[in-house]
Image (cartoon, rainbow, N blue to C red; front, side, top):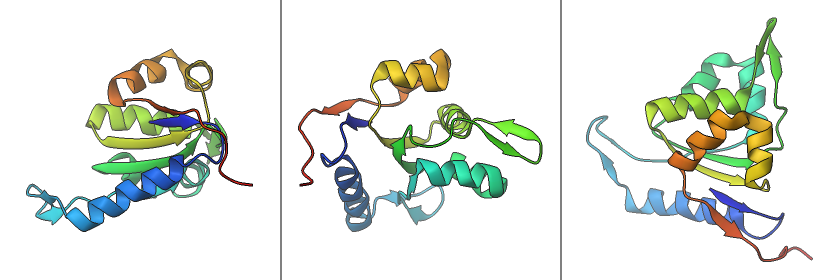
Length: 140
């Protein structure tokens, strides 16, 4: 998980990792394919949870997933009368499935705990290593 202020390169690093996977082409012998990692913005994840739940579940079950800008999405969405917490649900399923999750966020640990709850914050501590980008924005 890459954490830090806006504009200091977190998404760029995640995209570089995605490009590296595409170049190296690590074989996935179980699925007779190669590993890849789509990057999906957290707002789009919430949109899929609300409007295309089947596609949302597909993201939950991917071997590798990049989640960009965790924390900017609506915490709750309503889908046909059902209330969902998109990122909470996604991260819980990915924890259960042991999916590789690469995350960028501007949130600090206390904000993550407040938004997603103790359970998800604790599971994130197991799922990811945190790298803090403490440099200022590169954007001028």
